[in-house]
Amino acid sequence: MAIKYLTVHCSDSPNNREVAAAEIHRWHQEKKFDGIGYHAVIRRDGTIEKGRPLYWHGAHVRRYNRVSLGVCLIGKDEFTDEQLRSLELLLQEWLDLYPSAKVVGHRDLDPKKTCPNFDVSAWCKETGIINA
Image (cartoon, rainbow, N blue to C red; front, side):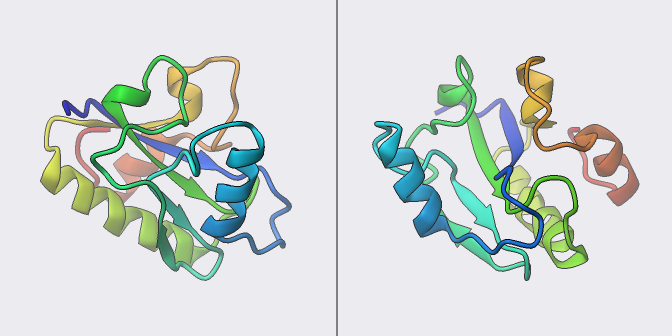
């Protein structure tokens, strides 16, 4: 699979509410998805939980699912330092696997969305992540 995008999402749940990948899996099944649409979920404490396997195309950005991996930060618009550190580590790991992929926010691929409610490109520049 040719991965062109590494897409950052948020769960759009209250910032103080803990949500696990298993709960998102259930939400997505209720929407008639095959299961969780993201490849990873980052909880409020920075724990990275696996979602779909990397070889299975996602269900997180219409028209881009076959060429992207998706990671979901739990929360709406206030993410913890632990989450952002984990996000940086995960994206670097994925960039090692897919060095030509571009790091984007959901909103960068779908202008009707605000997710993940921050400028991923600017954040990548601040952290030194390449390919943003």
